[in-house]
Image (tube, rainbow, N blue to C red):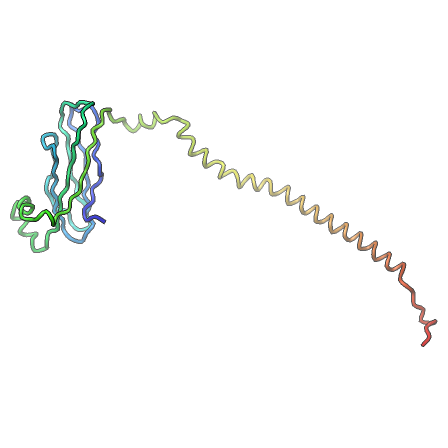
Amino acid sequence: MEPLVTIPQILVFNAPYNRLQSQEMTLINNTEQVLMFKLKTNNAQHYIVKPTVGLVEPYSTSKVLISLCRFDFQPRTCYQHRFIVESFYIPVEGLQQCDREAPKAFFKRTPRSDMGVVRIRVRLEATPALPQKERLADVPAQAVAEPLLDKQPALEEPQKAKRLRGPRSWFLWTLLILAFVVAGIFRNEDTSKDSSHSPVLDNGNLSI
């Protein structure tokens, strides 16, 4: 896991661009040490970042507000705006010194090999962003109903199975009872035949 995570990882701005737009970014520190961060962009004339430098306490978050200034947006132009977030650990003994000195001085003294870098892309949309209500209104009713239709057969199948299971079980029980009755009748007939053909022993005519 990266020591510093940014949410979102892609900044999206929508037309029209004749106004100031702002996006909030969350920096998450996943370590048990203090992280100092600094934001940079390749189009500083278009953006206002507050704050550009700051600290993130261990296992905590910090908010950064990124605002896009108004400019002449050309739909056919391929804009490649991007940000990077540089960060590095601050020793406990260096916290007091950091309070007395400018934070940018720490970045100047820290080698780039000791810094972590997170890259953030910027996407400039040529269409305006739709409000939440309009987005739901534009969704076809069939698309909204389909998930419910998918769940309905799963709910109705057990009930249908119960309804079918009742008549079948009675039919099977009836066949089983009839089989026992028929078997009993044939057994009684065989017993009566055996008794009629079996020899009768007369004790009086026995001779030893």
